[in-house]
Image (cartoon, rainbow, N blue to C red; front, side):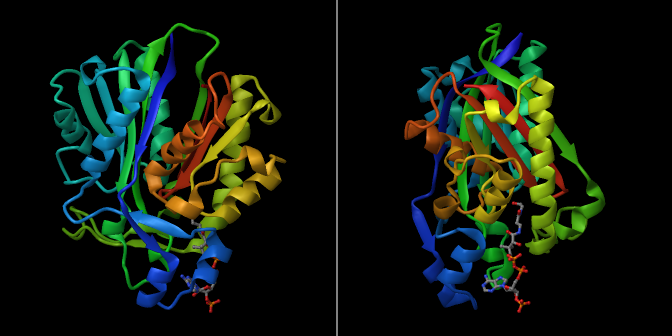
Length: 318
Ligand code: UT7
């Protein structure tokens, strides 16, 4: 038994915040942000619009793409760092939004790597028969945990959600072939949020030593991708499409150069979405599926790196 991806969908809030808009608030410029990151704009959730709303919209789009109904789902996993509440989980709120009262729902917290961790967890649960049809959702309102006076972080992130329907399958020619997850808590202070229920009883703000994170990201993502392909018995050159976490175009370029990937094989949405943390990989993948680049039967690799540090890669035949 394995797992296949039956459908994919995404959702972006309607409000767009451009680099020029930000340059009015903090000491930055469109040219600095574009040159250092590739980001041109980001979407920001409206007042009264929460992570569960974004995730629910993406989940409905993925169900429609899969030709399935909410009642078919018996597992909901949400990767998020910006839940509506400390508890209950955003997954149970989405479960309620879908009107289903069976199966299991829970959140996972691996920051920007959350969706890759989610593929590993959901694939395992489908393989063991715990569930038959799962929704894996990456949903974030990172705008709510940014220090809007800190130019080193506030220009980098945006809000959004992406979702896939994953189903148990005995089809040996398609589906998840391997997934690889890693973490190293030694570097937790290079990228973290300075608040939380136990330590400060506040939500806190994102803090990052960006240039340090950058170096680890390129090295660790490249290693994860090699490990993931080796474990699946294929080579990097067999992969049709690479869907990376969208943190910085220079990280995408650095990894592509190290692994000798063709730039046109690397899906990039960083210019339009910025870094949406756990939502960035499914958002980028949905973009490339909907515009016709990623097709059924293609070999696709996902990868991400984030706070913790956490990182990983997942390989599947779509
Ligand atoms: O999603 C989780 C993973 N996150 C990442 O992977 C992010 C990884 N890091 C990065 O993407 C990059 O390190 C950044 C985009 C965050 C920063 O780019 P950088 O080329 O590493 O710049 P830097 O941090 O070394 O800063 C260079 C200069 C500094 O000024 P001084 O000290 O040289 O005078 C910063 O203060 O750029 C300055 N700076 C800015 N200037 C204009 C930092 N942020 C800004 C800004 N606008 N928004």
